[in-house]
Figure 1 (cartoon, rainbow over the protein chains, first blue to last red):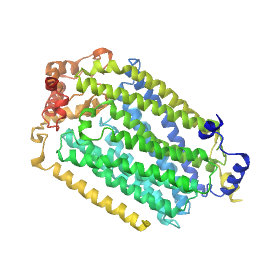
Figure 2 (figure 1 turned 180 degrees about the vertical axis):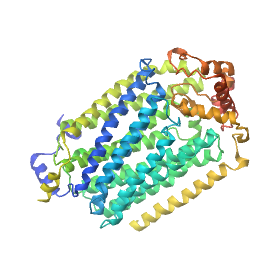
Figure 3 (figure 1 turned 90 degrees about the vertical axis):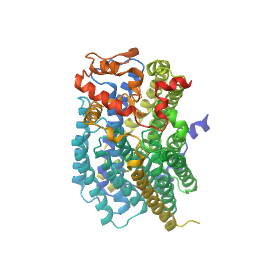
Figure 4 (figure 1 turned 60 degrees about the vertical axis):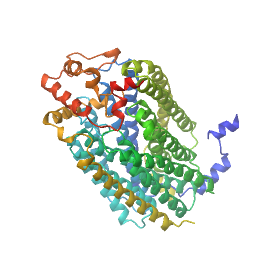
Length: 475
Length: 144
């Protein structure tokens, strides 16, 4: 029993070890006052995550026939809010990560802290306006890119301000590390790739084609640079492995990501009305995409095993290694499961995509944001709640819950494919047949939510960022 | 053993080559001889239909060309499956359409708007979807 308890991370260190490790790592803390701005981006992320889950429940209940909110929040509104909140809380998390990481990597304060707060407030205003607008039929109705065009321009200004602050800090800094460059490059490319999504097209096919330039090249391209940059930073801090070794492998991983991911965009083009050449190109390169995620998982685990030091913040380590491993399963393996054209012909447009989407986003992006928050919070606030049972429970409950949700989506999706695409049953007949899987989904979502609530309680218990944390450590 | 410099060259070189290939394939795909969408048939009415499709976020529930919310039926080949009369009735319904208990928002489109959307679906129905059109078409039932 004790071994299982220890394996789950609840009690792997005795007091002497803890003290030793705390002393060993006492200087690995918040180094620059301006890093505190990251806290507010993370807090905003947590708020949006709660809202995202709430709208997820609205959709889940609607799928089992409990749609009492239909007149106020129809499914298309709930879905747009759910997916857009995901994007915004992750982006806010990435921005917070950048505001925390870049000063430390560049070894200087952020060039302008006030502007960083202006950027956060304007991001919040644009986000809230978009979400409220969705409830009044004000949107573009293009999957994942529902934000109305007028707000798109404000998003561009906001992101330019963010990039200006980050890049100026980086280039005025004392050093330009690979970790910082990869992270910044990911954020810069993410901003540039937003632009094809703003081009107007008369053809639904062309529209869809370039929409994937944004969505696919974000999540299976440049966001992986951001993830890689954050992962690299965390591994350097948590394992003590030499920066040169970690950053060399970072290049290999992001190289594999682009090598497979860019042409892998073709898996979205199989059946939307463009040339058959994408069946070949997309098939080959998207089949290679799991390699990048496999490399990332092996990289993280090997660096952990290679590391001679053990950082006392094992909770952050759990989230970091968990992100690398779960992203391989969710984005790599489950993506591969339906990426070949012969399979995708039947799974395209079914809940199988939702199965892959949930576990991939959770592993690759949600968990890495939760990892950087878990790492940075004790440093920002000076409250070292590393050994909190609540924190461990949050990790396991949310992970088990999300795994259960993925299985529920997967079973519903496979049954849907078989009944609808093979046995040729009508859509709604099939939906009624598979509604039981959404009961399971809701139960697992409840477990997941419990984990997230515990995580947020831990977040709140850390208190607010304090200059004392900085001064105490420097003294 | 791989050096950091070689790793960086692999990243930058690989990225450049694949991006160039991707842009080349995109240009090739949208060249006139490769058109599978009957692009010339996109009339003003089809564009108006697409605008209505987007401004009401139909994709938030339905799927089209296999893309959307998975909550309501795929609308590629919907005219073949249901016929324009049925589709028009759904679009113009003043009360929520509720097949098998799942509600659709009552958009109450005008006659002209319904015609625009039907023109949009009609254009979609003629796209060569590399075999997916057969999967979602009523004709595929004959293949059982």
